Length: 114
Length: 112
Image (cartoon, rainbow over all chains, first blue to last red; front, side, top):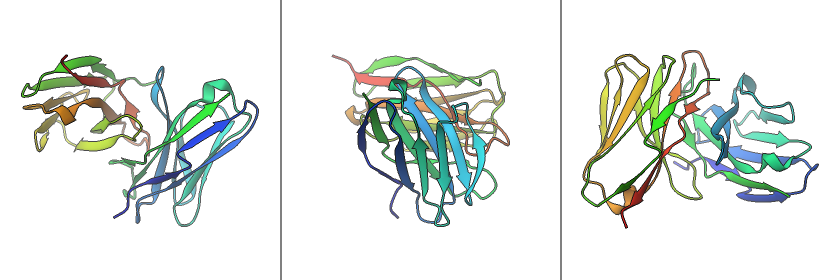
């Protein structure tokens, strides 16, 4: 079974621009969670989608948004990029219907904002 | 927000040594997970724990879900060079869909 895939792997953007990251979950997994990883803050939860609905959201500004498609693929968007948005963005998928327990991570997208 | 205190922050290992690390929290967790992350990669799930007191092994790795539901431990026996990396504990609160709370990680390096 193929793992979680994320595209692109690396991205360089300029302050003020917007960016869209993509995540394809493990086949059959319907839950996708997104995390931001930085050296200072560690891994922080952004949001979680299940069946195209956002079920949970972390403490991030509204510039961070996401969506999920009917095939469970998910995208996250960051608008008006700031230098502090430079981070590794990870998505994770889970097969649980009611709650997400075991989460399997993709390799991440390394975003650099200059 | 919720926090997990993971210790130690870093440690040096010599091949063959046993390694221990732990995570504690002020909150009660429904699930504890342990991950390993190598440079440039996403975290890889090592062990999942669902019941207080549960002891689960995966090869040379053994993890336990604390009785109070507020802590968890990971032990690595007879370490080998490929054990080097960063280990993270993660907990999930009941009803918190998809939201794992992570510790800051324990970095394992080889003794010089």
